[in-house]
Amino acid sequence: MSTREDIFKNVVSHSKEYGFVFQSSEIYDGLSAVYDYGQLGAELKNNIKTYWWKSMVQMNENIVGIDSAIFMHPKIWKASGHVDGFNDPMIDNKDSKKRYRADNLLEDRITKYERDGKTQKAAELQEALDNALKSDDLSILKQLIIDHEIACPISGTRNWTDVRQFNLMFSTQFGSLAEDAEAVYLRPETAQGIFVNFLNVQKSGRMKIPFGIAQIGKAFRNEVIARQFIMRMREFEQMEMQFFVRPGTEMEWYKHWKEARLKWHLALGTPAESYRYHDHAKLAHYANAAVDIEYEFPFGFKEVEGIHSRTDFDLKQHQEFSGKKMQFFDPEINQNYIPYVIETSIGLDRMFLLTMCNAYKEEDLSEGDKTDSRVVLKFHPALAPVKATVMPLTKKDGLPEKAREIMNMLKLDFNVQYDEKDSIGKRYRRQDAIGTPFCITVDYESLENNTVTIRHRDSMQQERISIDALHGMIAENTGWAQLLR
Ligand code: GAP
Image 1: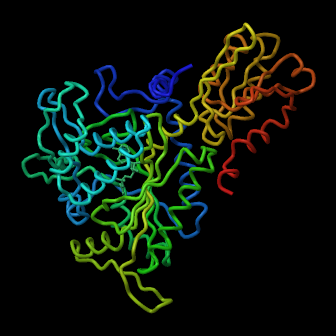
Image 2: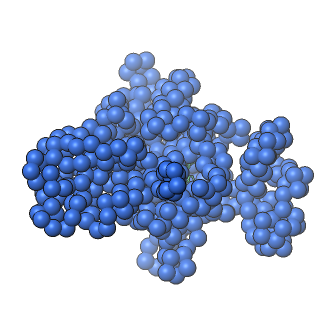
Image 3: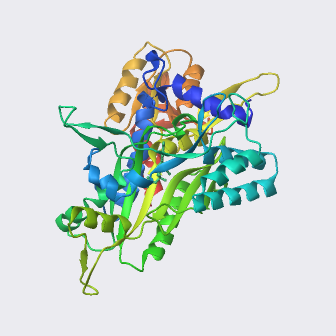
């Protein structure tokens, strides 16, 4: 059995071996911090998106979803503050020539102190880091790195440059001729596509405040240092929702969304102790309150989702830079105002990684002298990429035909697989490794009385049920209702 330290490595290799995640451009030695989702990864990712979309858009009458373009007018990023302020503090090691995020080096040291039981030291450094980030004084960050004797993992030396700011936006050329082309940015967040469409949606949808606009889409950041697999990528996906409220009510809604979003995570059955809130000490240029929902990955607690009270900053800025009014007329109080905004922003890829880490289990099944084990992905059934696999006991005597009949009956509504290779035991293990909740075995009795054996992934228990009851049983166990109610 693996130690906690090995688990993350095993999750990464398992993701590749079973077709969840591949390094992008792998045959060309890869592209740093860019990943492709494989055949099962794409299914899992779609299921996570569906869960989010249904719970945010479908379950809330006052939230609608949009899909805005990645390219946006360059002035938008000036207005939003990203051109001037979307920076990370970076530091270089002069010997290895490697570049790091100064705050990440310190966060890693905090995690190490926590792991070593030095909780007091961890708390002190966390406070010092928060204060340094709040004050925007880069020299304090460097001093903390020196004081805590942080060495470069590559060179092992503490020969550091000063800490400098680094803008994270990618820019590219727009238009066919490079000379007169205008520079545009690849969006670093999906939120601005929502802000600039605020009036379009409000008017065309006759929305009344409070209301929300949700969106799932790609975002791009030239991360100084990309690491921990799909945790920090240069191309990634966000699921964001901007909730527009009457000024003065924002703290009520902030509290509401902070609680609602954690509930969304916990509904998946993830243990509550794997989550915690982390209040921001340094607020982004647009926020008056912000909290992260953090999950305990094998490498420590890290942010998965942010809930931000963004005031009227963005709409006000767009009003000023575009010259177009961004106001809402509130008939209840007979007033025009620029709404305040509560944002919920979750990284889809981080949620994917969380789901893999939480589901991945190495189980010892040894009994007496007989050693046995299995790797199983215990996904919530609604998220599982494959819902059921149909397995004829043998490849003859009409069993494959009967199994195909069942496949055809189920595949309209569920992602199901067919598998007739190897022993049933081996087939079960293959399905455990990809997290399939149900294995359906077709045997000779099936031909006689129209029943099959269902084997449950988590308990490994088997039961005999009628083929007529299969569809209902899978629908009930893998459907969205249990998550959304
Ligand atoms: N609109 C607000 C916003 O973008 P953020 O905290 O910078 O806020 C929101 O990002 C979420 O996006 C994070 O909680 C994280 O899950 C995800 N995220 C941010 N940068 C990422 C990256 N480089 N790779 C993967 N996910 C990332």
